[in-house]
Figure 1: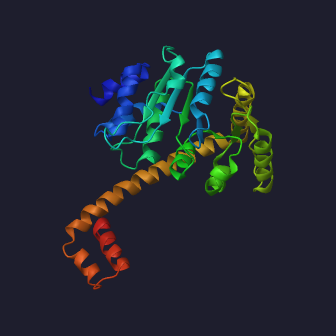
Figure 2: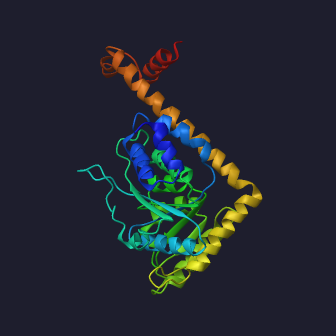
Figure 3: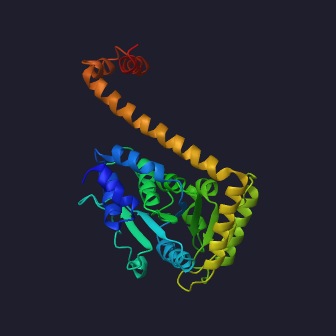
Length: 312
């Protein structure tokens, strides 16, 4: 199928075409730029929520509850679950997403696990492109779920409008290294499994940390939930809606989206230049030997590469 034909089916909301288009993103297909050009004018309508947290905090269960809440309001949903890439098949691990399968037969719900495989730039560029495909397919809400709270996951979560960071009671020791990062990226904190001992302490700890952090226009609320029992889900939805209203009223929604698009374009250009630089470096015969023999230093070698790339 050519890019225009696939784009036409994506715009019509065809689930198989959407899945095929996301596979193009994963594989870094050569026709991806043409597909992007055909779909881009139809994007920018969906609202996106990022959901991140350490493994085992109940993100998939929470996502299932968010789907349930959205569908109760007649909102169509797409879930993009960013998973580790299998070293054997290249596909996404955890791809079955068993906790979400109760929604699998609902035509108003599209669920896809995604690995990055051959996409140039990895998750940082594959995720926004996949989000745009889901957006162009007509979904109202797109939920992006990641598998952890490392730097890659934080970057993926920042590709969304509202970011939910999920923790459990006793969360402190397990995420100290990522604490600064999640404080910056979170728009709403969720203390899941709040029926367990220590939940109140976790809420207090987060509120204290937020009180000590830099002041900004939006202070992330801390919402206790139990995805298993269904408790706190309405409060979580209300918190996400409040953040959306704040972004719209303040003008931050458009500013965030514009900044993300510009950062994405810069990263795409950087990746292309990096690839070109690698090609030029191989063409500069003896450069590696000159570096190893200390006849040129790295700055001089970089200047040679830049001169060749720019034609100066």
